[in-house]
Image 1 (tube, helix red, strand yellow):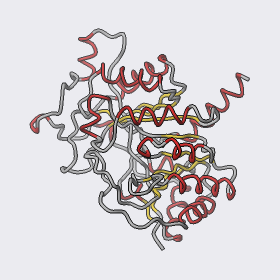
Image 2 (cartoon, rainbow, N blue to C red):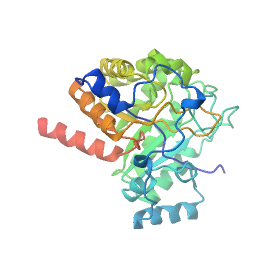
Image 3 (cartoon, one colour):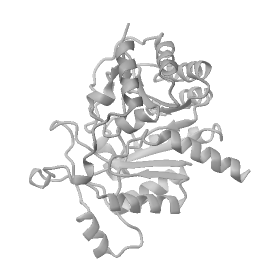
Image 4 (tube, one colour):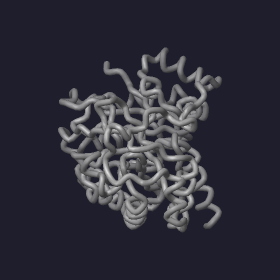
Length: 333
């Protein structure tokens, strides 16, 4: 039996301030990068705002002990996710399905690439059983890219959503999917299972997309999100980007406009953190003040919610996002 894997996926970051003078913005951002930094310009140390307290709440310890007892493998722990204590304490966890070998090789990502194992047809039952045993309030289901499968793994996503809903109806389910190579039938398979949130991360701006995601396409990812948005008004559509790869202010503003045109409702923005020296270097660390600016700008532009901060990852405060937007929708009706 294959081990289950649980993780807190990376995503999101921001800089800039619309309406600020160029000089003021440059002072706050330290100057926006024009391209990939040279080695002598790489940041050497994490700033103070990137440091977090060690996890240790009662629910965190309970979930950790339960996962040990169930033989679950926590990528949250292996990856030293900065939000693990807060998320687990609130009853939120992220599961990686379809194996742990990706068919693509993105230079920002820590997940290994190569030839994946055969599909585990029992995975939906086992993951849903774990969600039920952990009594989660919100779970996020993500996966590696499986370009070797005709539907990219969409059927397994859908089966898992339905299994979780059957076992634990009070748990909201968010999916963080690959691009399914733009296959609308695969997207529809997932949407028809009715996740609370359909998320596909764009990861970075148009200008840097080919560098960061050589196996992906910027416009194809936008098309996935737009297609999902048009299939079910009850499913919230979400994406996220990382900052610190060399993006400029105009790149981020252009990305926001593209995302809104595609119908995206929720945006996460966080700091890119380099998994190892074999991965893309960090161009710079974005300040908390800049992240606050991007939250303000994004929501002024029209996103229903923007989660923006140095430690933000795509599933950060995910349950709160669902509850807040549902409450707002109910109040408006």
